[in-house]
Structures are given as C-alpha cells and as structure tokens.
Amino acid sequence: MELGIYTFVENTPIAGSNDTLHPAERVENLLEEAQLADELGLDIFAVGEHHREEYVASAPSVLLAAIAARTKQIKLSSAVTVLGSEDPVRVYQQFATLDLLSKGRAEIMVGRGSFIESFPLFGYNLNDYEELFSEKLELLMQLRENEIINWQGKHRPAINNRGIYPQPLQEKLPVWRAVGGTPQSAYHAGANGIPMALAIIGGYPEQFKPMAEVHRRGAVDHNRKVPPISINSHGFIADSAEEAVDISFPAFKFTMDKIGRERGWPPMSRPQFEASIQLRGANIVGSPQQIIEKILYQHKIFGHSRFMLQMSVGSIPHHKLLRSIELFATKVAPAIRAELGTSKENEIDDKEELQNS
Image (cartoon, rainbow, N blue to C red; front, top):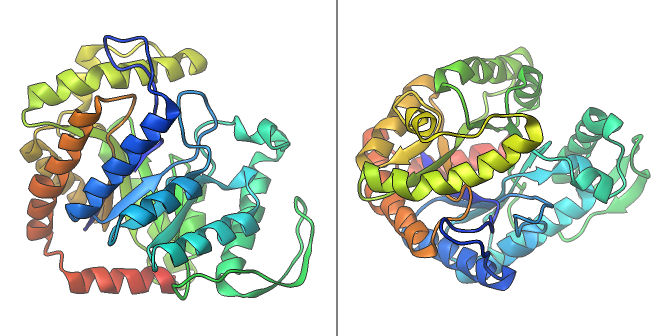
C-alpha cells in the first residue's frame, strides 16, 4: 500500500491564539513538512486547491514545484484540482512541467471540489457545474493520450490540430478522480479506467463500500482492468491517543464549525469527535498502533492500494505536525507494509498500471 499526506495548506488560528501565520511562513512550513515526508520514505505528498482566506493553496502546481526542488523520491499530486473551473490544457501543461522538474514524480487528482468559490471567481456559471466537469475531464484524458489535439466542446474554444507542450517525462501523467458520495462519479471513473480517491470524512467506512463496488462494476462493464482505489481521510498521530485528541480536536472543531455555520451543521462536540476516532469511525486520530489497526481494518473493507491522510484539518502547531509525519513514516508505514506485503516490485507494477489506465 502507498501511504501519503495531503493538505490544503490551512492557515487558521492555532488554539489559544487569534493570530494566523504570515502566508510566507505557512508556505515555508509546508516545504518542511513535504521534505520530512520525503526523507522518511512516505510515498505521496499532495496539495489541494482552495480559494478561501483560510487556505494558502490557490496554486497547487506552484507549491508542488517548490516541493519538487526540495525532495527526491516522493510522488507529487494535487488533491484536488478543481477541474470544472480550470482550463484542462493549462492543468496538463503545469503538471507536465512539474513532472519534468521532479524527474517523473507528478500526478493529477481531479474533482469537483468541496467549495464553489472558484466558479464565480473565474467566470463560470454554477448551473453548468456537472457539465463543465464532465467535458473538461474528457479533454484532460485526451491530452494525456495525444501530443496533437483536435477537440471541440461547449464550454471551451475548439482546439484544431495544436500541439500541447511540454510533454511530461512519464509516458502518461497519472490521473486520479476524487469522489465523495456520488455513485455516478464512481461508476464513471471505473468505466473510463481512472483510479478513484474516495474521501471518507464522516459516517462509517463500511457505508462507503458500495462506492468501491460501483467503481469496480464500471470498469468490468466496459471491459477495463479494475483501477486502483485510494482512501483519503482526516487524521492526526501523536505518541499517545490522549495527546492526539488534545492536539487535533481544537483544530478540527475550528474548521468543521466554520464550514458547519455555512452549511447548517451543528457545532462539533468533543464526545462526537472522540466517537469519530473509534475503530469504525471516519477520523484517523490516535497513537501509531491505533492508526495501524484502523488502516488495516479499512483495508479489509476496501482492499485499497493507497491511503492518504490530511493531518492539518485546521492549524496544528508546526512541531506537532512534523512529529505526526514522523510517526506516520517511522511507526505506521513499516507496520502496514509488513502486514500487507508491500515491496518495491509492487510499487513499480502499480506505477505502470496507473500510466496504462
């Protein structure tokens, strides 16, 4: 199993303070987080796209390029690229350039996004939300297959026999599709041979098993090899379960309560949070041993080949976040790999499968 970290480069007040970091300091912390993850042998580091004041992540490809200069082995992904409000040609060019900079470590994770700010910001009509994503994903998949493009759609000017440059170092840029709870999205990803990143940030993991089955059925119905699945979750790791909860709960609560005020959710209580971190809960918070048990428990449900953890759901003190990354890489990852028999040969096979899917 590949193990990695994703972040939206949150910059909210740390518990006990009303102040946020200067964006330059938050970006420097991000680079240190990614560099540590690389040095300790984690597999993926991903940066999501948001256009809100509490995130410093409106330009993931730029941040990933800076990370590429400080790292050597770790894969670099978006998580996600909000494709409905992006130009697929520019997305492809940016990540092809990142692939050259990183010597073949770039990939793209596309999705609709959990917020809508980018659509009015870039002049898109929210009434076209579904159609925009579908059309642009179709174009992106054509871009990874062909250097010379002929394409016509409804929401973008036609491309008539134009070359797309630069081309990446990898033969094909890996493209993943992030999915929440929509079965149609899971089926479409499978039908097109696209690996699926399934976000589990609430409820019980077993409730999402039908999404994995729908993804598989989409592939089988269209005579495709079943593509990989990633499980993406919120979480945090500390030396003890009590410490993990004490550190992460204030940050989680700040962020989820803010979103909740916008969407009509009640405030998060500590008992609710503690219930969510039990074995069958959605949040992956606790000691290394608890995290190991929870990842293996979910693997029995999904059989996934990748697990991604968002450790900064709200701002965590930087040194505590670095410690969480260290525990993930040095305590959790070796145990997971030993239990599931992960090897370098498996990783090479998985990479070839992604490029060919």
